Image 1 (cartoon, rainbow, N blue to C red):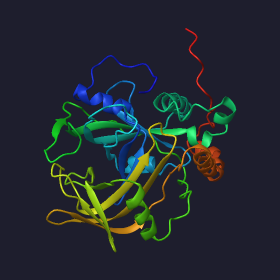
Image 2 (spheres, one colour; image 1 turned 60 degrees about the vertical axis):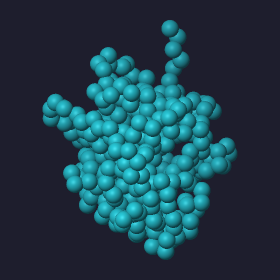
Image 3 (cartoon, helix red, strand yellow; image 1 turned 120 degrees about the horizontal axis):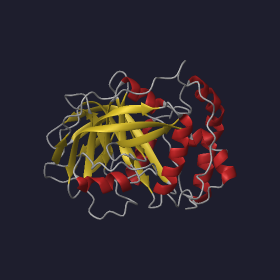
Amino acid sequence: MSNEPVDARPAPWPEALTPVFDRFKTAEFTSLTPSGQPITYPLTPYLCADGLALEVSTGLTYPAKADRVRTQPKVSLLYSEPMGSGIAGAPTILVLGHGIVQSADLQANTDRFIRSSIAKNPEANRSMTPRLVARLGWYFVRLYVRVVPQDIYWWPAGQSDAPPEHWHATALGELPTSDPPPAGKSPPPWAAKPGDWHKSAAHAVQHLGLPVVTSLNADGYPIATRATGMRLTPEGFTLDLPKGALAPPTGRACLTFHIHSETFLSQENMTFIGTAHAEETTVQFRVSRRLGNWSLRGGGLRAAWDFLGKGRFLRKRLAQEAARYGQPVPVVRLPQPDKS
């Protein structure tokens, strides 16, 4: 959870879900393109300091997720990977929510993200020095997305053949809107487009575990489900889903693989978009293309090299993106020790 002062009000959802929201290292976050294509990536999730909402973030220098939320605020978070959480028998939780981009104070966002990321992943940040952190503004300067849950579905012992339990928000009033967008055009994609998807798909099947498939429900919310089995086909993937899944994926869809180490020193992910078609006991996912990814493979020096390599492309964008918001480039600094 963030180190911001915590509101004393009780959580609006069942209290048993709060440890997952607070302690999971990753969640599958889905945002929608203007045309309604779901895009699912694993992000580090946090419990908001007020205890009333959830949040994720994206770098100021690669703002596509935030751009999508501004135009399509229906988002979802799937908590399906307990690695590193320390929670035995963790439930699988799907949150359908209203996304709000927070960008009015980039300096406060940056300070908050550094505090929160160190608290969430202390091992991965142990080698951070003031000099090194100061050079990583392209990564640490952040846009936040606050997610106000509208519906929460959970499977108490993980995904199973049983239907989920359900919580629905009541008496929410008018939902807030995102902070004003920046001036000018968003930057183009920072990484080269991936090539043919077949080789990547074979690697994902062999090394990245069971994927998460996402499509939209009748209300336009992205529904993400972790598959229980998969097989590679010439056109994409055949997926097995748990019988307790909300609904079989159909239409435009996204398929996301990801793994990470216990201490989050390394992580790898791969995302494909295409279409899903439900058959009697399976779902056929037809790939149209693979998307770019953010992976730090192998841990140690290799992961550090991957990370710094990304900075070579993104560092030059920092001042430009801050200027679009009419704000100075934030000072990137480690939190001061508590002397109390």
